[in-house]
Image 1 (cartoon, helix red, strand yellow):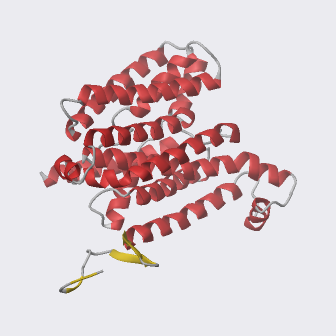
Image 2 (image 1 turned 90 degrees about the vertical axis):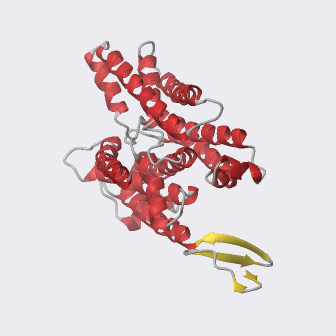
Image 3 (image 1 turned 60 degrees about the horizontal axis):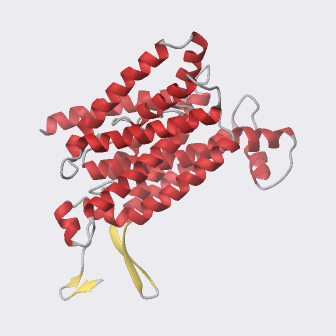
Length: 350
């Protein structure tokens, strides 16, 4: 693209892509991040279906994925390991995009679904479900309702003639604290066996997932990612401020509410079957922003970063320790250190 004074500089890492008379501005750093994260995610995916107590060579894995029948090895790959590996990529992408939406709308790096209580709300729903039924489906439904309810509660309590990002985060932290206390009370009232079983779910894990659970949630996450992509232009305008977004034709409150709904649903549907997986939604958008040099969190970069982080964390939890460790424990350790560093940096910047 050129102007009267010569070529237009769109900034570092940005260029114009032209195809048959059409042109679009794109960020080459984001494209590089997505490509590298995709390669890393594929590598983690292949290792996840290859490694285990019954190791399968990568050549055999490729043959099985290509449709060859290798007997027991095919069952191990296709029925036992593949659902978990697919869940790591798809659910990681969903959590990354959810975190990007919340951080962009609140303009706060702490505006993450797990920080503002969506995970705690889903855990509350699951705890309430096991009080009345042993049905796995009921636990998933109640966890989904709990996550959605927590998101709605935070929105209603923080809305005052508009939505303030800082108020949203503070109210979310308060709601998360209250729900965490309620969860502790509910656990103490359970018998030891039930409390132990539910507590394991509450750590966040991909280990027991099979196709009947993964397939519908993966489809839902895919649809929600499509909705997020359609709303991405409005999100970029909202990052400039409500006044600027309104001047470009964005219906501010409607767009914000739709984006919040997509973000809440992404976290709630994933958490309903995995349990709360901490810090992926917090770290992935920041990693994407820092790596790509973008002013705000990019959805594509956040999705790729989230998929890579969750897949690698689950791979580490499954194979780096003497016993299998839930992925939520691994991400909590990594995310806790990141959160401390983030808080220190924010304190020094003030």
